[in-house]
Image 1 (tube, rainbow, N blue to C red):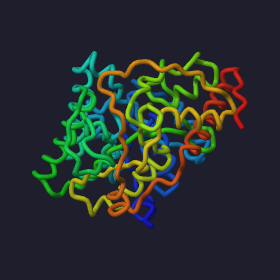
Image 2: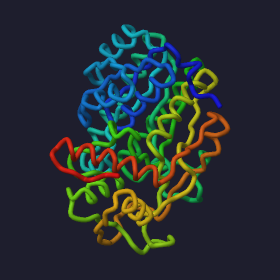
Image 3: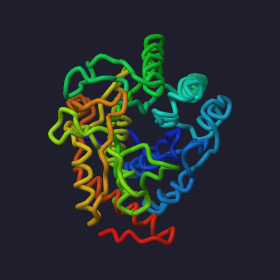
Image 4: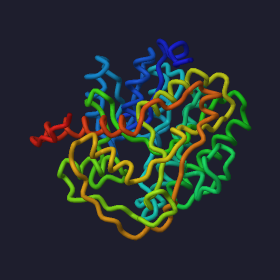
Length: 351
């Protein structure tokens, strides 16, 4: 199975938003397959401290450029200076609720930012791109599992920015077939690097389930709020496809390995089965040895009962599949939480 090492070895690849949760883990994976990642990040919702974790794991210092993808001249300069062979585009605002309150910021940052990035790539003659998209582009699931042929829609401004960008990329490729583009539609990334030196570090209240559960287990938050306990699922709570972040970023290495064979191809990255909120709670209780106090509230508008991927195309086109379990996700997330707690003078007593 191709790992990306043949294509990546010795090449520089720009990671926009590379200090973030997924971007920093991608640095580890790309270094492992012989790539030389370069990070561009404006640190609006991340910290360069994550690159210290990358160094701890890999022994490598990743070049870091502080800046915004909307600064086209800066992006051109970085691409030229490091002789980048491809771009993996993670940079973007991603909180659904925030996008409803401030849609203009989301369109400016995500859509305009991507347009400026693409223009900079065009102007330096670089036409290889892996784009970080989302399963939110499928909207309300009409059939399960969700394949790439599922109709596209969106129920919030964040999802619509992803849809607009995907359309922009298809139009770009139609105008110039020299562009090689892989659109990766993530389902629910979770977990942390198994070393405990790198993980999800949300600012404020976590938007995602696993870091929220982790903070409840650590005693940082009193209890978990579960939105909806009467869905048509085995236990009444919502079901999602949780994919380990290290499996997810391995998918990016596989995408880079095949990038020269791409046109403009959208591919799901998911496990292919769903886990309920209570499944995650029970797995985290097992991983942490602690109970997770929780309370069930009414459903939130826009939430769906179940959403999980058909990952067949990823196996066929990329030679990739997710290997880690929900137990692995929770154990690794708890190990990361314990390290963070110890650094702040708390002790979670992770196994």
